[in-house]
Length: 214
Image 1 (cartoon, rainbow, N blue to C red):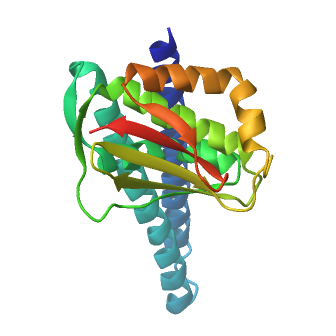
Image 2 (cartoon, one colour):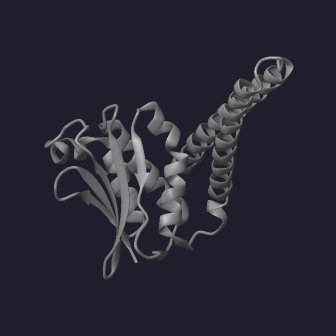
């Protein structure tokens, strides 16, 4: 049931964003038609307004392509129970798929690329659930204007996925006291155990770390 809810939440969010993309493109295309109709005004002014409309259309097309590509890859996640993945590609995918949730919270999500590729063999669906659950919980802690940085660190026998807050978050200094009391945290702990990993608090108290086997 948890996997079904997870896939439903992601799919609903991305399809909503795709509708927004298409609506903006439709509006911009309509504006361009209007501008061409009233082409009697000065050519410089008309060209400037057309350029702005084309910039909006190109931006939304890129956004739509990114969302569709990520959703397509996401849909293929259950194809194999265990699969070899590039961890950065998956964190980037989940960052894009979580962008609407971050925007609703007025929070910036930044995914940092590692110095070298990190390949692991893992249950992809369970990993995505863990990543999304972590991002979702961190967004609940951050206040508007905050930032969540996601980075990877490779160690000898494990890989760390670090989700770190800036100063704009609730419970500052009390994260360790408050977080373990929530059902969300308990679910994340169980999820990480199923991946033969663990979740812990970042040493400075301003984030959490997912520990994955390599």
